[in-house]
Image (cartoon, rainbow, N blue to C red):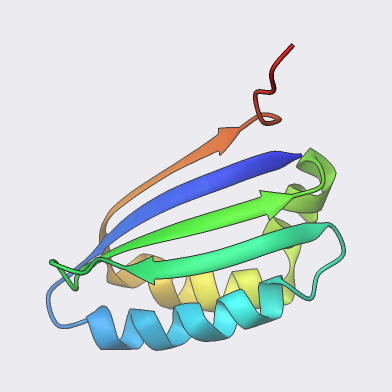
Length: 98
């Protein structure tokens, strides 16, 4: 399993649009083969900040997600142009006790 955590800060005036697109994107993403969880959050104190928590069976499932049509439309074409900052990290399998 891999986990992806992404942080967005949108340019002023774009929070409502990004929120709506993220809701649609999360709903589509969880239907993909290999996507275990996809959650989008809006910061409770700063509405221009968002966080995504994504879990996939493996790296291939994550790459398939990034090649999908809804990723292209929702993220690449719609959300990315509205961002002031974006940081994403991919984490390996969960750490488990020996």
